[in-house]
Picture (cartoon, helix red, strand yellow):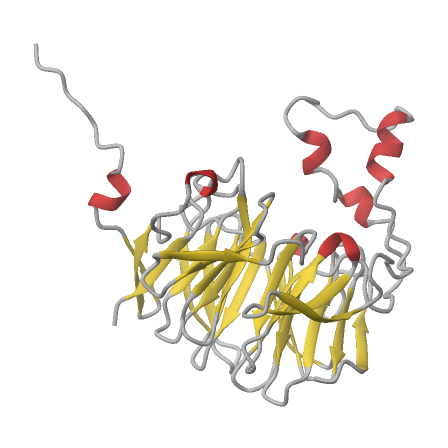
Length: 344
């Protein structure tokens, strides 16, 4: 008898490509190399998001670790960690031209600007620890369950945690409120203005000057262009147009800087969760396994992946070469950072 053995690193020893619309990517299941053991598995320490800095280093934003930020060089090698004590629970963020980081801190209702080199907080946008009055009730689920109005099908399958933002809870949001109530993402335009998606406890997009002055708020509850259910991610394209994902209504909204709707796409986006942009394209990844690529002229140029493909992700980023980085959290639990290396 011959004992046969399978390759437990099969993803590293085979070639997988995804292509569509003239774009082609090599799928790299594990971009991060030499991570400390406690960072290996998303069930113990999950990557909620990430960004690419001005030198093409990839920064992973971890939850449940002493240091929320883990730095990889452009080849994926582990460099180090930073940010201990600076963030309660990071979601999505961006790097500024000055190499500082703007990061949403969900439970304390702020966008925090951090100096990574000095390891300190520069300032906060929002009222630390105080959510704005959108009507959102973060305890609605637990109240209804204890009153016997909601019965989870299996209480031991992390149902209470995973339903912390159920549709019923989101429906307690009754108004577009001021900044912030559990903000989700932040982006900048070429002028230095800051745009924030305020979506876990609000239904708004906010525009600030670089100095932090609130210039505009728009949004509201609804299922139509310019209205939201779950404002989950935001980016600004090469033409300074503001792209916003409504994750749970499966929609992409595009605005000018004043909040006027320029374009809208709904359906077949795979629960769009993460968004990134460069000089060429706008990239949207869905938790269902879909990658959709748009142009700044509002054309859909590529639809890559399929339901439950390995492209499932929570957040994403893009580097100067057009390589994409997917941050799965529990959407693809074996991997902390997936690279889609662009093949030209």
